[in-house]
Amino acid sequence: MAYLTVRVTPSAGRNSIDGWYGHALRVRVSAPAERGRANEALIRLLAELLEIKTRRVRIVRGLTTRNKLVEIEGLDDIEGILPPR
Image (cartoon, rainbow, N blue to C red):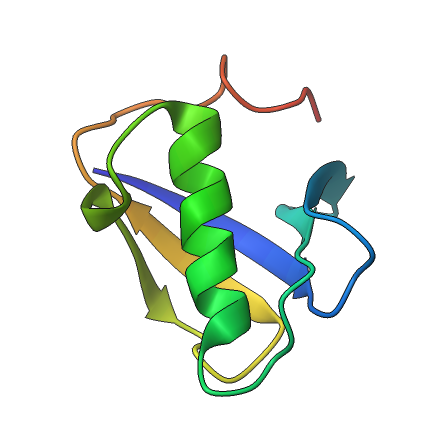
């Protein structure tokens, strides 16, 4: 399993991955931060980027904060897939 630290900006104009913010990947999602919508959008965006099913992406820490720890099942290394640091 791979783990990824993510900093999410909800209610953005578009869904995008904006590069690195320190050790965290900066991600914008258009969904609002209410009733888990931004979390769902983050999971869908990462699954699409990694070309995996959404059930293999799980937020393990930070459900109610901008800083999240995401677990990605079935991947050992995601360095070549994400933007360079």
